[in-house]
Image (cartoon, rainbow, N blue to C red; front, side, top):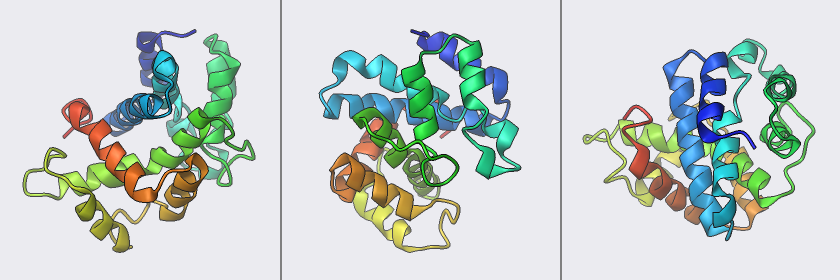
Length: 189
């Protein structure tokens, strides 16, 4: 399996924008956290690597979002990445840009938390502290209701993802906050 360091270098090879690197690191941390919740602690490196690599082709496809996740398989195969990881990367675009349905807990979790990490980070950045350390669920829920806030975040996808993994939306939000707190400096906060 590809190592974490190799995965991060691969992400940086195809993504030059610091915000995209920060997003990859945020999703990695959140995936590792959820691996523990789903009793997959022995696989948390795998879950983290999937989080790191999930948007590998974003900068190459961002001008045509419907093609996102379509270049990823070739990029990942060329780097010798396992098919399980490739499938998971493709599944996070289910219903948006791919027809690869998330079926495993790993895939369902990636689908659920990808956009949620962005919403939570943005909610933290608008706080006086500009931090996640004092961000609470109720603050995120308030921002959730404001459709003008983080307008690009598709709340329906997040809710569908929470339903897929069988956890209440409030718990998914709260666990994502907890997952991101320890890495807030690494993700540009």
